[in-house]
Image (cartoon, rainbow, N blue to C red):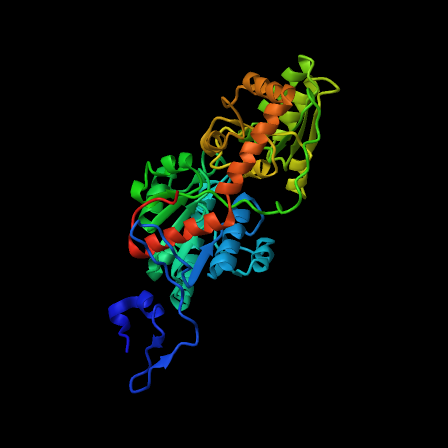
Length: 434
């Protein structure tokens, strides 16, 4: 019979024999043995899957990080047979998408330790609420006995504290800078928050080497790895050819309209192009945050009646928007990854991105587009003119980007990388993901 005091819950879960009450007969679990990883002599994980993974999502909406979580859950469940449950902080559309790929979801109310606009007293109150939420989550984890817990954003720490209390290995999926890209203010400050990430996590997975460098300023470097997202959502349809004509490229900037996203740079660059006789147009799709809409409206009004810019509040079908453009722009001053870049690459579209954060390495690694200095609208205008006047180069970059993205941003590759980290977290091995 197994002695739980000697082997702990991980040992119990690897055996089919379950301890019986004193004087009773040991019984066998009707659940099949969880498939474990096998490490070959080169250190490569030839794994199948762990038995159960619990994720903590910072929201129940369908933003970029949430879509990446759905894609990861789909890969883990459908390709590797993992048992995946996701804890949501509130009801929302994410739950239905998780169910569609075979992952369970439950709601446990909790909040983040970083906010965009809330004053500090509100943050302190939310932290107090989170203490209660962490205790509830810890009880859930003790009851469910997962192999690992993974938190899908730096914004919310409840799952990490709960895993610590329950004695379950924790992996932190850091998808964003937090302060530099979204303008969040961390209750503990970013440096101390990252030190807590280090203390509470067996492994930390980032979405780009640029973000990994930043995280490693406060987290032990041998804990930090990089894994590129799968990026598959909505991309299964037939690819359409680019619609534009030479000298008149249709430009697209896709994402929320926020000062850090560089919409002003894109509009100013377009103005330069059109002043020099170019016929490029720009479609800016995404919700507006704060007063940024007024700044954009004033800028366009100063460009004259035919400014060539169309603003659309939201995109019900982002892939259709990409298919309708010739070149995708990502003008963010600091982007941890740049999901939309990979989406555009997989649709065969060349991209132009600011040389910053994860976007820089995606473009450089893929050869799928051009880079320009962040905030330099003159350089951005030159890049637009270069691709607009040279369709063959644009097609070549589009093809290169697609080939790279189809190889490096797949569901199987992302799920395998994550499961490698799961085994490292459980066994204490070191090393990154890619």
